[in-house]
Length: 233
Image (cartoon, rainbow, N blue to C red; front, side):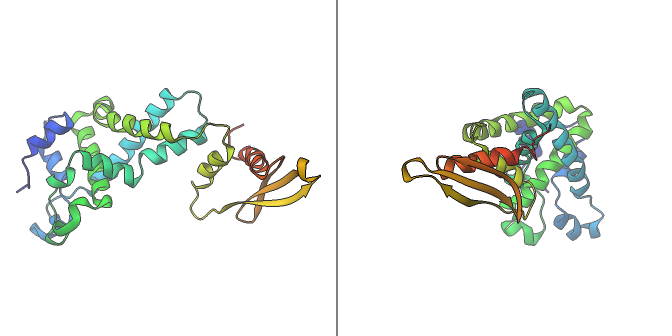
């Protein structure tokens, strides 16, 4: 029934299921279930629901213990990037998870590489491993190598904390629809010793102001002031 033998996937994930039905369900998309046995065949949606929480708890626990110096806001940014659809789809693709899925006729044409489908299947797989093993440490043994590789890429790309503009942008982006911009308020002094005044706006609200000998410096100082509204006291 499955496109590939399931023991091949078990070898790739480094875990052998005691209850193989859980693995089969994790790999069964609703489109296949709906086309077979009038939907009586279980699909992976419930396991996806469980796996989403297992994923979040495992990642949060790892970040909390690994980065004791980071405030809640920066931990939130890291978690968001580690469990976003792009990242989960990449984790799934590295396992060639799409090749093992049971899909309906329509989805089977081009669905095996769809990011949303891969994301859901990866979360369902996490839920299945957790139910079968009953142990978050076993889930972590499978999941954390993906998380650590992704963190490695992110840490190389992260700006230093003194880059207040980049850090502020990360916080603002957590709320969809928020617009961040900087507005020059004034320039004072002679050309060889100008002082620039800038304010930072989120939507139309002023979140901070700063001064500097260049617009760039003034913007950094304004962003530093704005961050006080986001960072924990």
